[in-house]
Image (cartoon, rainbow, N blue to C red; front, side, top):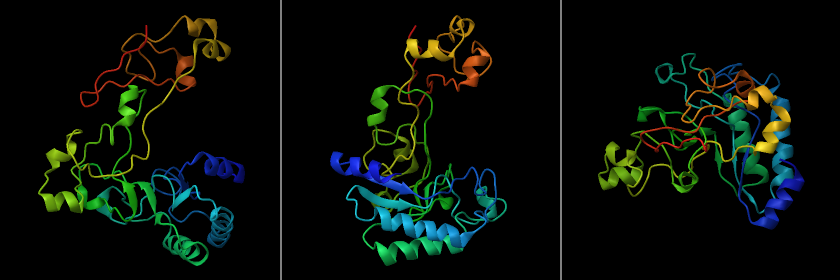
Length: 246
């Protein structure tokens, strides 16, 4: 993020989670390579420059190694190669830079780990949460739930001490939900009709997806809608169905 972004956040009283430049999409987890980037030294120089540039902004809350990385090496955890992201030397270097020239903010390796239903692969010291989502266009009230749609038996130390069970954690109304941050939640808004008319053909506009459509392609979804990343409304037993406005 730019300096202008942080200046605005300072004035508005926002708190920012600043990630560095890695993602599971290109650093081994889903694609790419666990050894990337190619030049580790240059990467850490950029980390140093970024921390120095941002450290005096009160809106900067903490640093993160990247988005949806895989910080635990374990072949049984879905990480079949046993690789980790970030690479161990970069992980150590980031922590050292933050300690040397900031020293006031925490660092977490990854935004989320996707622990699924196996608590042994979630480490709260390396990830903000065991799972993200749900995705799709949601009912507005769900954005005020602590963890909408979370279904995982991972228990916090506090919950274990209180004798909580995995079934308690899956109950959205249960006290003491097990993660404090939901790193990603589905779409917040969608274009107005006049906006849609500017980039969809008249034929596509005449093919508005049917009420209750749950697919993002095929069915009643015109190929132009799919090309522009049409997203259906969420329908889930856990969250509650949200239908089209039509």
